[in-house]
Image 1 (tube, rainbow, N blue to C red):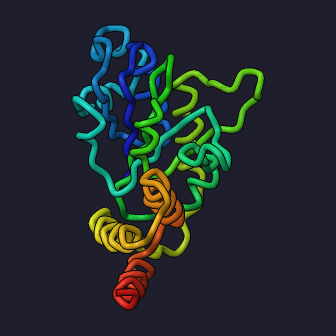
Image 2: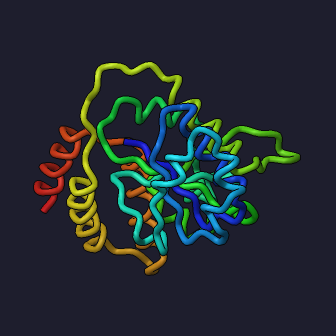
Length: 224
């Protein structure tokens, strides 16, 4: 299941337009995290057109910590590099290839109209996706961004499905990983924290299957 989440959305018209484009591509689960506007006002309803049902059943959360999913996929116009690991990203097409036909709960998180997602929010995401755009003006309108990513998800033809690991599977793996890292010597606490973070990002980006997770469980047991 794929859900769309909006962080502190500010414009009712954008929310309505997002409901419409979601339904165009077969998505009906919208989450609004701490909305900063009257999300069910006449403007939002009018812009949603024939997707009023998406708007009506939108789930409201107080904060990002209330968002639960097997994978939270953040979006950003600020692309990462080797010195900005948290924002290293996939393209929408690469994302679609990774998650197509998977029977897991994916939530794609979009940032604020003005400021996007903050760094700490980006760090809480399992994967990051960025839409290629001109460097002179890289930031797209929120509803346009949602539309492009929904289109890429919709157009991908399903192939044979290999079940991905669940959030619980990943939690157990990361517990083993953290135990191993904590036993290793590092010159500073910051370097140890970087290892915790980088390995989580690498493993999340790998979209591990259940079988791969179990193989890693065995590997970490042998390390002990």
